[in-house]
Image 1 (tube, rainbow, N blue to C red):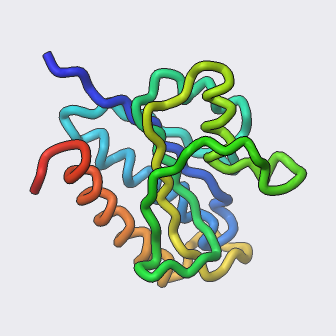
Image 2 (image 1 turned 135 degrees about the horizontal axis):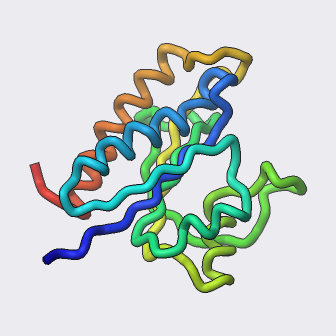
Image 3 (image 1 turned 90 degrees about the horizontal axis):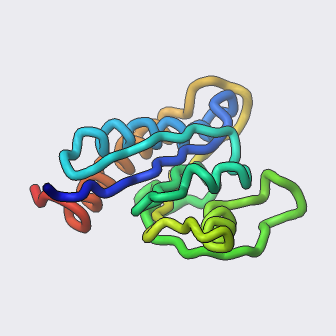
Length: 159
């Protein structure tokens, strides 16, 4: 019997701030995809922001997959990259903890995942609305398609 790859999928952002919802929306879609993969055991975490308490959820994960929106306009409209632990905070409040910081904390308490990925989607507007902009919605779809290819190429079945 083959061991399943345990993937912790975390989407964070504010679902009431237009494109800031991209991380939450994308994480749910990637969780749906990964749950359909026969060699994957996926769990989903949707949050407004990353908090230190989430380090317990990382315990036992082979792969931590973080999804977020950002203001960087990536050439393809999204980015998929491997990330490493980094204990430097981006600011002076709890909202400034990024995935790299959470990975560093997980390492300090002896529960780091074996690998971590960050998928970011370029956002245009972060005003009050429960709907992402049309451009961001398209980027979310393209990010999902690209992630599926990335995953199958690096972890699973080739198409």
